[in-house]
Amino acid sequence: MADPSPVPTLAQGLAPALAAVLAMLFTTTASAQTAGNQGALDSLGPVPPHHAVHQHHHYAVHQASRPQAAPPVAIPPIPAAPPPPPVIKAPIINVPLHPLPPPPPVPVVAHAVGDASAIAQHGTRITFGRDSADLNAATMQALRDFADRLKVDPGARALIDAYSHGTADDPSTPRRMALARGLAARAVLIEGGIPSTRIYVRAIGRPPKSPAPDDRVDLTVSGIKQQTAATQ
Image (cartoon, rainbow, N blue to C red; front, side):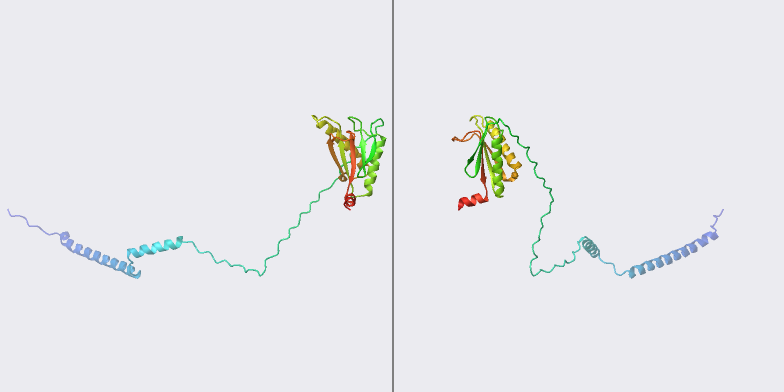
């Protein structure tokens, strides 16, 4: 029995032709795509080298981070002469001034011990009883007469030196008693019309050794006219 021969079919005959057609279409499409891409690249110009691209990027970053220069400042012209010094006015402060209240009046004690006598510098000496600052009628009138003499000279001042007996181991007690006597004499002068700014009281306390009594107040006058007369 003889071997059967292969019989070509229609599909087997068309396969080579179909493959050739597909290969031609693929080649044509790829060539067209490649030509289109090449045209687009040619329109962008030549491709720069890698180091040129890197250098351009570094320059752009450096320019962006570099601080901008400040605009120029106009310098004012120098004046021909310096300006005058400023005049600062003192502030005006309105402070109400109230006169000090006068001291309470000093009463006259009829049985008080003491007398009055004249001393140097148009002065008056008032003596007191032991441990007392009371004034009797005579010493009160002597203080009023002293105030009248001060009124004649507006520039005159009254100096009141007050003393009191005491011991060396207790200087505070005689000083307090001397202060009470000086303030009593000052109150009489203020009551007589002498401003307190013209009266100076010094509570000395124990007096230095002298023939004068320890318990006393010495009033003297000090002023412009008195000093002028002493220098002439």
